[in-house]
Image (tube, rainbow, N blue to C red; front, side, top):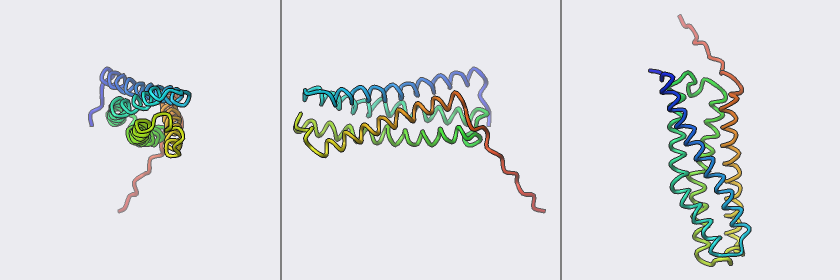
Length: 173
């Protein structure tokens, strides 16, 4: 397969970093909105926080996740790194799967549930056990997302663990 030249690789890397930065930025916005929602006594602010998160989950989270995954795969396949040649890439792929489950899927459904619950009963939502469980699941998802995305940035810079050992094909005569 044809490899990218240096200029092409740099442009693809820039796109990858931009999509990854959007993913990380949106995760931080989710954290800020969750802190705001947890500390408000205003039903309108509570609903606005979860509505904003849900809109982001439907748009930016999906687009940035798709963009990051596609550019990441292209960078692996079209450069010397490969998809499975290095342990650090395999770890990033695992963290990417976690981010996909947390971002487009979990954040979407958890924020939709929060919007639905806050629309029905306003501040009385806080007394609803279902809302409390949903809120904690959202917090855990946001924290795991930030940790996994941060870990991917660190792994990308330091590239720990090195190259996998290549198996030698057995010569059968």
